[in-house]
Image 1 (cartoon, protein in one colour):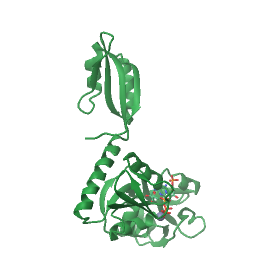
Image 2 (tube, rainbow, N blue to C red):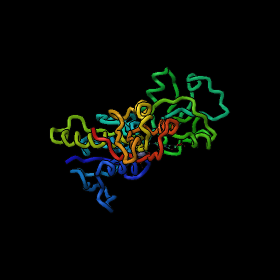
Image 3 (tube, protein in one colour):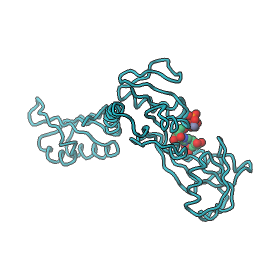
Image 4 (tube, rainbow, N blue to C red):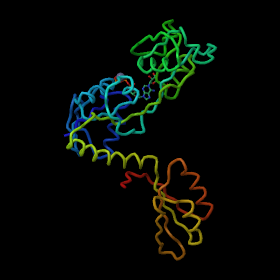
Length: 283
Ligand code: PRT
Ligand code: ZN
């Protein structure tokens, strides 16, 4: 039976459990203990700090895990990256006090940089031939320049709000991260087969996220134009309505183009347009 490690609490916990739930896999209620048996898939769920997940998976304590790629890169453990999961997106960047006249990476030479990601920072500095002092701290990295502990920081940025609040400016985006499914290298035959089943479910969920199901009534004369606007997965579905000369048209559309398509469809005569959430796309 597969054992999956997920973050016990923190930013990735809810979305990891949400993704599993969408795939029909739920954690047994009330079990926020270290380990629980899942329902809906033969799997055990191990709750860990995110820092510990790469090592747990590398050692085979857990067969698979959901964790940020930043932790995978920082911990330098041997794990396979199975699938990117599209949430927990962030970057690790160098930021300096707003007033600093930053003129490129050479400014960093001889400076002190505070971070919780010394390994990724060290690689960036070496790649750029910069000799700077890495000051490793566990948390509240963003206050280090204000209290005189560092000249710059290297920390996770998402919206950028925390940097602004602390009078800092992002100057180098170094590492781009998102949550990923990782696995112990060389899983046995049985576990590899179980992982394939899990990947199949997750792929269908991830494909359907960001897609909407559109339904509308359409006059016969507008069919050709509507089909050209909505290529769909093969082509849109057309069903005749009881009213002569009218059809019901169904199609799947990406969220980012949804409103543009709706406006175009209205222009060619579509009426009563319904937009529905898509739960799953199985291919
Ligand atoms: O207790 P445990 O060790 O498990 O958790 P943790 O406190 O180490 O990590 P947690 O829960 O904060 O983050 C888990 C993972 O979420 C990270 O490793 C990243 O992969 C991902 N992630 C995505 C983020 C962010 N976005 C994020 N914004 N992790 C941290 N932040 C913090 C950042 O450190 C900074 O303080 O949010 C602040 C910046 O956010 P903005 O939006 O103001 O720029
Ligand atoms: Zn952590």
